[in-house]
Length: 212
Image 1 (cartoon, rainbow, N blue to C red):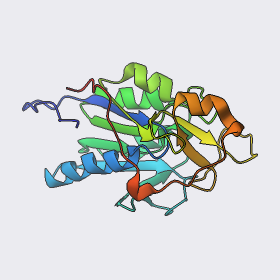
Image 2: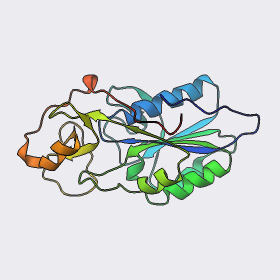
Image 3: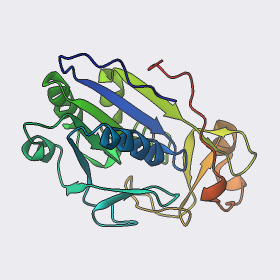
Image 4: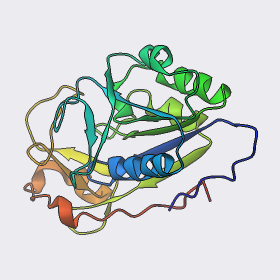
């Protein structure tokens, strides 16, 4: 579990990235950290891409239906425009859907002394690095990689396998289009029939967390 660094009187900024496959608990972990920010009475701003309307147009919602209010945005630069002067923490969900400028935006915010918490898919459905996530991972002070459970064999899953015929990189979907798979089952592809994802039973297993 991620433990926040000791806070000094001087406000220091940093970047935290929560990454992994679909159904690994990324949004759940983001919400958990943001709840702790609320308990500490810190000023925060939360953002998500406006295209993500799977559960709600404004709220960030996990697969387990936990939610927190956010501001939908169309570009990374909007985060700078909408972040207030007294903001101490910025949260961003589904970072892979935002433009490549996101890494520079997060760096600027952290240089201002703001704690930035970002969650997103590190790989797309083909297994390639997704959007701005590679740059964010390189610039992050703390990285947490979460694992889902492979629906085929039960091993740790790091890939998001798409079983629909759609080939565009961005395809909003849940259990109707994706399932988490381990490397071996991901490589087998269509040789294996899709298996239902039971979100309430999906486990998350952090790897060695660079934050500790």
